[in-house]
Amino acid sequence: MKAVIVRHPGGPEVLEYTEVPTPAVKPGWTRVKVRGFGINHSEIFTREGKSPSVQFPRILGIEAVGTVDATSAPERFTSGQKVVSLMGEMGRAYDGSYAEYVLLPNKQVYPIATDLDWARLAAVPETFYTAFGIYQSLQLQSGDRVLIRVATSGVGIAILKLMKASGLDLTVTGTTRSDRKDAALRAMGIDAIVHTPDVTCLPDDAGEFDKIVDLIGPAAVRDSLTHTAEWGVVSSTGQLGGVWTLEGFDPIIDIPNNRYLTGFYSGDVDAQRVQKLFDFIAKHHVDVTPEKVFTLDQTREAHEYLATATDLGKVVVLP
Image 1 (cartoon, helix red, strand yellow):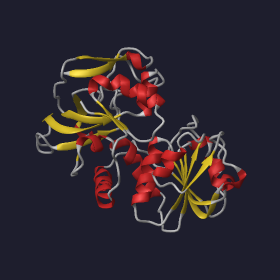
Image 2 (cartoon, rainbow, N blue to C red; image 1 turned 60 degrees about the horizontal axis):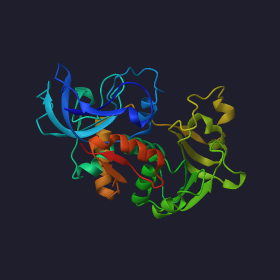
Image 3 (cartoon, rainbow, N blue to C red; image 1 turned 90 degrees about the vertical axis):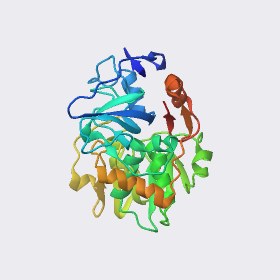
């Protein structure tokens, strides 16, 4: 089969389009014919050698959409069945989706019912699964004032789309470091934009919000809590601030009275939640159209494009 393999860390040039043996099915695993996958920043980090647990050579790719090709569990899966997979150790401990076929643990293969074409389907799994988990955790209500910190990120855009399609009367503000993508954000329906050259600190006059999506993570959580209205919720889901844990965090002192702090871990994948996501997309006509589509032999170009893109949206590859 054709695949894109990384033999050693480096820039996009280390993504080698080549031919490798098609993986054979083994007990507990299912082979999926890859119909599409999204390009994720975590794969770029891995390609650059910033994932210490990953051993090279490796086929990257932490998500895939496709059809069942062969399986060790015929009582669970049928040939040609439409499935998605995401997270786990895919593309890290074992070869991932940058290929014509991917071999996956049975427990990580999720059959789905959806009418989305392959390009739009490929734009959904990891990004929108995370966004949907955040959406649910916020317990949104009409009238809520919502802040999305780093609104221009992939998950930020996805949750903006979910909120705007939901039918709830929400006022959504987004933060971004510069005005480079303001026009694109406004075109997607964002109500206000706050520029934060220091992503970890909101301006004093930013005001209060009923719900805050904090994609910066531990580096900004305390700051987010100071801008949360009474009975408001902060969802700290993401680590774009480069800090992984909250050191010396005292919930009694650091969480103001009558505020709530939650999060969502996208590595905990639930088959029912996956289908619920696709049902939500269908019911509310959420626009999941990718920004740009590449072919498998253009995966290197897809990585290069993602590093320089000025528009917003998901970059996908259709083998």
